[in-house]
Amino acid sequence: MSMSGMPSYNPGEGRFDAGPRPTVPSTVQRAYWLVLAAALFHLISGIFNLIHVSSAEVLRQIENQLKGQNVPAGSAEAAQTFSIVTVSLITVFGLVLYILIALFLRKGMNWARITGSVLAVISLYQLVGVGFPAGIFTIVQVVLGIAGMVLCYLAPSTRYFAEAKAFRRANRLR
Image: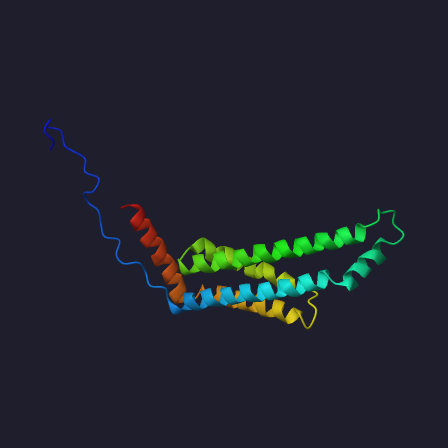
């Protein structure tokens, strides 16, 4: 009771110990490394794609497609430049996305598990029309990403994501 005779409010009263931070299980650790490996293969695939779209062969193909159309001079070069910029942006964006998903998986963020799973399924579309020999990097990238996400749904991983959520929630109440 306070000096005025009214009960006082003590926000620290009744706090509970959130316990130690949950330990990252080996399944999530492996998933982390598999997703990072997929990022590396995504980068390698992007480099191969950049080399391809920068080639004289692709420029000739664009020029052949534009023949007979009333387009200004330099349109083929502009289209090739646009392709180079697009492939570069997609490669950088994908790389950043892979790294962020991997980092947040290891932190036990369930949204990263869900997002990574959806993206892993969507990545299957990359396999349509894949060319060889450079396409092997895309295949490996997709397989590594899917394998990493499958590991996130095994029992130790599922338990970890639940414990990490409970730990964050308990620490938010502190």
